[in-house]
Image 1 (cartoon, rainbow, N blue to C red):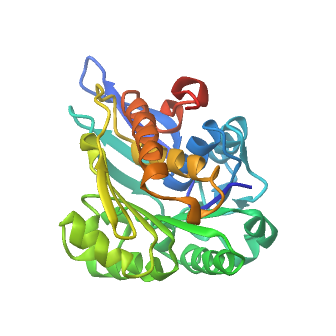
Image 2 (cartoon, one colour):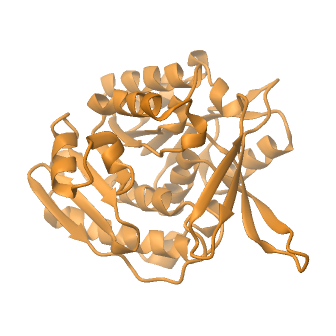
Length: 312
């Protein structure tokens, strides 16, 4: 197994426009950052699995079918008998930027239990990925951190994408403490330029990524929206420019980018084979994948396939 992702899979009620009377229209798109990443990587040729939890409801059944249809192993997708599948209402402004509101109290994704983590699946994984939404409340927080620690002990490369969603945290200080707590277990970190100061106390790309690398993180990637991505690989830093596109909406673009990166890294013989010469083409490829997602609407429905991007 190339990539095992742990975390939320949910319904993104994404605004698609308004009626003639001005009433907003929403599509029920499959989403959740770890699920998005698993699908993005699977569409680009990687073998992926998702460890997550949905409700025993129509949305939960729909999400399972979408993951399965996109080649994601759903053998570790648990079903909660009491909590409904989590909903995220995604409103989009005229520039394609997103605003989130969550219907999650606590929501099935937050109820993932330690005995629902298949250790055999973690042992098979080359990469184990998680995000910060899983860290917003227990039992999912403890479950996720225990699973990551176990996977690290079994030799997996640990990847982390700390998506900051203010509405899911009791306050900013708690969010920063919880989001920073796992950093010393992480090998590859992907975050946006807006999230860099939350984790590194500075918006300076060189200084911030150096501080994060000082925690033992081998590769730090800071996405810059249309300007591409800044990277730090040890002492080596640089920027790979973005790909111009007409914005449909930006939902899922970062997950597509990181999924594409991991799908390509899975072809290497370990991170020791990674250098700037091998990294920069991978990041250029991932930028192209993210641009295609951004040019279309929805998260998972907008993600490109290997045929669309080519296999160069």
